[in-house]
Image (cartoon, rainbow, N blue to C red; front, side):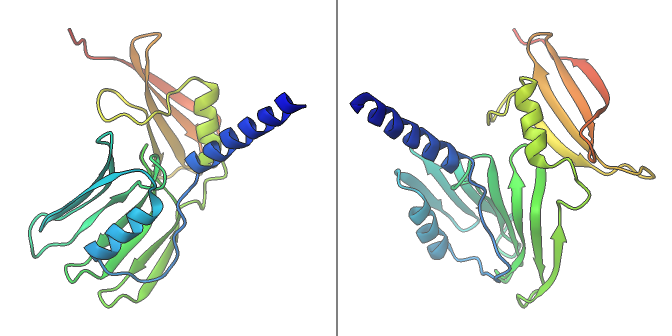
Length: 218
């Protein structure tokens, strides 16, 4: 009985970790302003582990203790606009934000590190008034969750990596076609090639696929 209780506790911990890892950030239509102090406080609230914040005139960067980039906002020069991503909650699903030069929020939405938008994206005018809501899931009956499941079942890597040939998943809107496409490109190590799969956005069926030799690196 004691061992059974330990097993239940262990299972609960693992399940809690998995849920946290798969948590999609929640956003709303509330207008915002780019404020480094508020950003720092919000990141610290979301992260229990030690973080390192670098704040310069044209950059705001947050790294974890391993050096992995959690948050990065930047602009080209002082009079231009800040834009960037916040992956402090989930390393694969981040919050994208773009601001006007007056620091008022222009656009925000959820972006997957593999290369696609999801959920509702909010767009504002220069005074912070909400002007439109974009539903990026509309027209995609074969959802992003189904695409990720497809990748797992077919041994397509969903690990985040910053170099080499990494998995990319994009939404493609072909002109004159009745349905859109999910485009998956990844490194097929068993064959030593890069594979590209086009999946129908309505049912997930493979429309076509291509293979390309990977560059040889000594």
